[in-house]
Image (cartoon, rainbow, N blue to C red; front, side, top):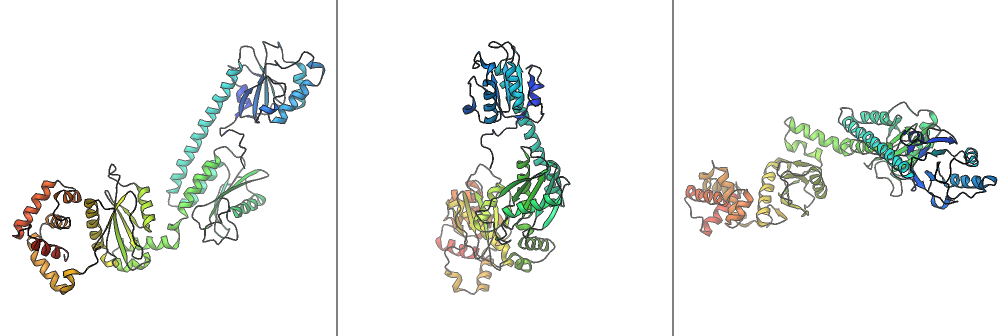
Length: 501
């Protein structure tokens, strides 16, 4: 567990504070270890500052609390021991206005308890020392953020290489100056990179830590137990260890061993874990390989019915979706992925103005908040193209009627189509609509206008044209067909014919 009393900022090393010439600080007692870290500065004139310290402080005092006879007793020993016991890392003593020099007994006590003692000269107020600590912290924080940002960029670039998994591991090992290992669901080492923090003991400890986030009792193909941590850390001689369960639910684990543990290392390793989760996700599984194979076969000329088995179904529904936001003409990729997940499919096409989703026929698309949907009938793969057209028309109708979802042929009634042989119905439709055969825009306008009961405004919305354009096209249809489109019988016959072509 992290120490909640330590602020989430990089510490300031005592050596860096002493190097500030504008402060004029001088160490006069205690160890001169350059790795002594200061987490904050605190001023106190209490004779026992223990209750007011959290640990990691540079305690500043002018000695107001020191009694006149302090040098002849145990006052300074008690005072310094309490600071050390509370976790204080250094003591700054201000010379003037109370004391002209630092008391010798205080110097001896700091040497005895290994507490660094700094002499603060008269021109340097304590506020300037505290501000210097915050400035150094800010500089360290900025440097750490720059380091993490550069690491994120390099990891993302590595993930786009032809060998993404080894590239990400190499980049991670380089950034933490250690070793990065990818463990498989059975605990075996799949790939590794880096030469730091090696050794049999380190390797065994890291593999054991990986088992903590991937319990042996959990099947490799199922998600980890809810009680299992998603990450764990440990320390062995000469190495800091960390393990991260990858978010694929397949049992992959990232292990990291580094000689040191910098503040940003956890963030860098977490970014690598996210990238590796994507790289070891579904598209690396058998299902993903089958879908990739299906795409390649389609591109190479195979018919849809020849690749449908690879996608896992013989009946499919095409869904066209448009965001209700309206202000963003181009669909958002993240929102489109979320829509596909809600519809139960990862087969998503992000077109310039619409999202198309190919959904297995056994799943019934439902209205989705924030989207307007047009749904085709369930069709075999060889009819995907026709289903795509059905979904587009259903979406146009949904937008025009402001319905969240419209299904093609939602009424489910056979009507006149069930009274005539299919071949004769198609022949009649082709003959009736022959004057419009060379004018697809007119045909689609007539179809939409009839489906919306002759509404000029709704037809204009559905087709994304001006209402005057709709009027002109319908008038042109009436002229070419030599028909009165105000006649209900004519409209019925045309609607029947349009459903057959």
